[in-house]
Each structure stands twice: as C-alpha cells, then as structure tokens.
Amino acid sequence: MARSNASHIPTIRAGRGGDRDGHRAQPDVLPGLVGFTRALARAGLPVGTDAAAAYLAAVRAVDAVDVEQVYWAGRATLCSNPDEFDTYDAVFARWFGPDTARSVRASRQEPRHAELVPLGGTGTGKPEEPEIEPGAHAVAASDTEVLRRRDIGELTEAEREHLRRMLALLRPAPPMRRSLRLRPARRGSLDPRRTVRAMLSTGGEPLRLARRGHAVRPRRVVLLIDISGSMRPYADALLRFAHATARRTPGAVEAFTLGTRLTRVSRQLRQRDPERALAAANRSVEDFAGGTRLGDTLRTFLDRWGQRGVARQSVAVVFSDGWERGDAATLGEQVARLRRLAHAVLWVNPHAGKDGYAPVQGGMAAALPHVDRLLAGHSLATLDRLVEEIRDARRT
Image 1 (cartoon, rainbow, N blue to C red):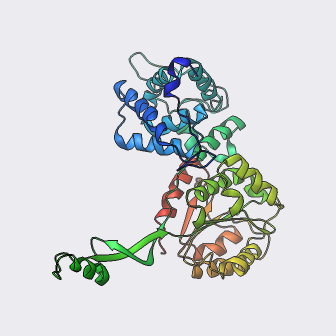
Image 2: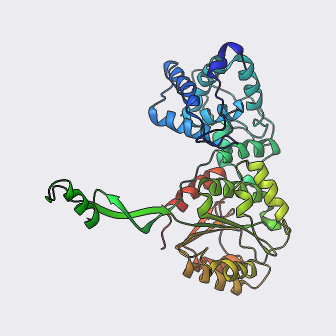
Image 3: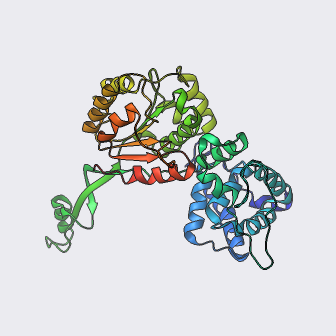
C-alpha cells in the first residue's frame, strides 16, 4: 500500500457489530469506500447509489483486508461494461496506491488463458491476430463474459481459479414464505390490541386503526449434489455454489452429497472462507468420484431427514446427470416421494444445456415426470439463472 493513500485503504476491526473474522464492516470503513465510488463517478463511470450500495455489501461479504478481493468486488459491482475497466483500474491505482494496483493487475492477468480467444478465433487454444478491415471495429467479449458461458467441465486450471473467485461473489436471494407469526403492517386485518392501546392515549377515540399481517421468512432450501465419477468435472463448482447459498441464509439451507452413500455437509459449508469450507466438506465425503445409487441415497435422505421436516415445504434441488447404477424405478419412486413433501423440486443436469440433449437415461427418464423444472447447470451463467429459479420456485 502506498503511504500517501493509506487513509483510503479499508480496514476492518473486530468489535461491536462485527465478528473477529471481519464479517461485518465497522462504520469507519464506509467513508473511504464511498469516497472511492465518488472518485469513480468524477472519472466518468456511471456509479449511482444502487451500485455503491452493492459495492459496500460486496466488500462486507469478502475479506476487506485483502485488496485483491476489494478490487474484484468493485469491478463486479461498479463496472457495467468492459470499456470501463481501464478507467476503474486507473482510479483504483490512485486511490489505493500504485504498488497495490500493480499487484492486483498482475493477479488480474492470471485468469487469462490461451483458450480464451477473441470472437472469430480458431478455438484451438492458440490465439490468432484478427484481421480488421479499414474502418471496422473489432468487437469481442471480455474474458469474464466468455467464462460465464463456458462449460465448467472444459475449463483449464487458470480458468477454474477465476471461476472460484466469481462464485465466491454470488449472493443468492433465498425463497420466501409466509410465516404464521403476525406483525404490524399498513394493510391487513385489524389488530385489536394495538388499536385499543392507541385509544387509551386519545380519550377512547379510535383515531387510527392498527393493522397486522403475516411476516415472511426464508423458505428452506435442500441441495442434493451428485458427486459420482460422471459428475466429477462439476462437483467443485456445485459445492462452491452450495457454499454461497448456505452462507447467505445458514439456518435455512441443508446440503447433502449423493454417491454410493449419503453425506450431510451443511455444517462444513457454513464456514465463511470458501476454501476451508470445501476442504472440510471433502474430508467428510468418503465416496467422492465413485459410483452412484441415486434411488437408494434419496431413500436414505427421505427416511432420515425428509420425514423429520427438512424436506417439508422446501425447495429441493437435485444436481445430477441422471446416470443411475441401481434400479431406475426406485429412483422414480423416491423423487415422487420427495415431491409430495417439498414445495418444489428442481433438477439441475449439466448436460441439459447442451445442443441435442434428451433425457433418455434410465434414471433421468424415471425422475423427470416428478420434477417441477429441469434446468441446465454447466456454466456460471446457468448457475446465475438457477439462483433466480430457486428464489421464485413454484410447484407446477
């Protein structure tokens, strides 16, 4: 960090309103970050109040002591198109110091890989110089936008590292349900107790009628992740998606892995740091990249957890390609049983988003009649779409 700009560098100290890991920023962090957004606005970036609020929320969710995470949180929330990246980098360098800017730019080059070629490239892994006609403009998607649509199973190690950073910034909004508990509201049924209490201060005259309505609370989300050998290229990204979902509403998300056995990984995925969470989950899973018996493991889940209330009126999401080594009829029976308990059942198949795919596998064909939605899950863009589907899940 440059000494001349030390006052702008955000720091988080544990204390009232924040935990010792810095999960919640102290108020003295905000002026420097708000000043940074104003500097971007003066430099010509269209940074409004909504974007600034999203940036502050993103910084609270990451490690604000790590300037690289602060950089990516800002670029993801304050830049609306790739043309603004250079201006963002210049303001970031002035605000946080040139030494910091150079280190961040060096890390920014890491996700770039030879397979991320401009539009019109050969796609062979070797970039080519595009031929540009005089007066024509070369238009190419940014690395981030290309990566969002790439198949997770085909990424290189450098691209996977970039994907991990992007998944860590996901903040899924949970589905909501109406609670039995009533609370004060502008509209709704009459609240006799509050109305009478108000009448006591007005001499018995009902000048204002108090009303009440049902509160809302997060609906439970159950994530069932197939970690068999056929799902191995997608398992890491799906577990990171589960981590982002569990960190958003820890008490309303349950996560399990499906293979030759059922493993509950909810507690491990509630850790704040994604790397520690994934490491803890991997240590607890003993059948990773093995076989799969979806019907038997779903029966175990429903017998041990579903009937006890975990699956009742929840949004159940099954991540699997549908390859079943056991009896496909058993899988169909257990998915039908899950649907009777759950509010909605979503099935995420990484192959469903590919051209020419048809759900002809035995397990997939048996489960499909009892599924509310069949969704793709092979890229970051489809996982973004899945966030919306979970939030708005309805039984069909």
